[in-house]
Length: 421
Image (cartoon, rainbow, N blue to C red):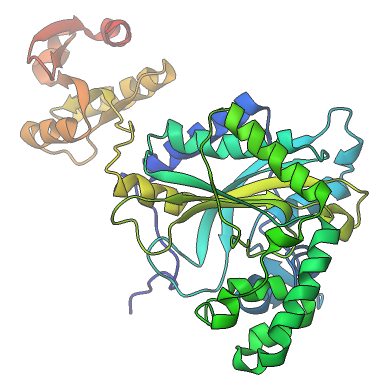
C-alpha cells in the first residue's frame, strides 16, 4: 500500500525548490537593506499564546488551529501565523530594552491552518513576514508597507495594488463597536452562529464574515471612517502623506478588515490584479497592533507588521508569466570510460569541489552517449572525458559544450584549467 502526503500539504521538488530559494534570498536581501534582522521561533507554542494574541473570536482560533495535548498535559498548537510568536519572543527576551528602537525583525517558515485546500492555499504553507515593534510613528508604517511593495517590484510583478484603511485607535473602535452592536443586534438571529458569538465580543469581525457577506445589514453597517477621532484621522492622513512622498500609489477601502483581533490604526493589503490569478486576490496583509505586546505580558510597545504567503507569491509570478533567474550551470561533467577512469574521477571530483567548482560524474557506468546527455541536461559548460588511452598518456580530453571545441589537458592540471574558464 502506498502512502501519500496529507491533504493540504505539498512536496517541493528539485526544479521548483530553486524558485523558492531565489524568492527567499531576495526577501533576505531587502530586509538587510531595511535593517530588519531574522528571528526564528518554535513551530509550536502554548495554545494560550494564540488565543490571547490572535484573538478567540477569529476563524483561526475557533476553527483552524492544529492543537494537541503533550505528555505533560499541556495544550500546544502548531503556529498558524507568525506575529504572536515574534511578540512573545520580544517580551520573553526583553527586546524592548534594546538601545535602538523600534526592534525590526523578519521571519520565514511553515505555518499551519486547518482550512479547505484550494489553489494557492494549503494547510501547511510558508509565510514571510516582518515586524517593527517599539514605535508609534506613521513613518514606520510607511516603511513596512514600502518593504512589502519593494519585494513584489524587485521580483518583477506589475499587476498588483496597495489597499489601505484605518481601524482607528481604541477610543474610535469603542464608538464604532457600540454603533455596530446597535445596528446588528435587532436582527442578529439572521446571521450565522459565529456572527452571533462575535456580536458583543468583536462585532467588527461580522463585516468580514464569508457566510453572511451579502446580507443587507452588512452593506448598510456603520462605517468605521465616520467614527475616527481627531487623533486617528491625523495619524492616517500622515501615513498617506508619507506614502505619497515616496511615490507609492494606494487605494482607500473603508471596508477592509483584517482577520486578526489585534489590529488597530493602519490596515493594508496588497492584491494581485493579474488575469487568471484566481478569485482570492490577496497577496499580503498587515497592519498596526498597538496593545498586543501588553496582551502577551510586556510593556507598552506599539508595533506594525505584515505577512505574505510564498505559495501565493509564486502563483502571482506564474500568472504574470515571470521567469525567475534560477538556472543552475555545471562547470564540468566528468565522463569516465572504464573502471580505472572512474576510480580516478572519484578523487578528481572531490578535489574539484574542494576548489569551489560545480562538477558531477557518472555513477551508473553508462555509455558515453548517455553521459553526454546527462551533461547536456545539467547544462554543463564543459565535459572532461577520460578513458584507458587518456590515462596511459596522462591527459584528459576537455570539450566545451557550447562550441564543441576540445583540448587535451594534462591530468594534473585539469582543475586549474577549469578554474580559469
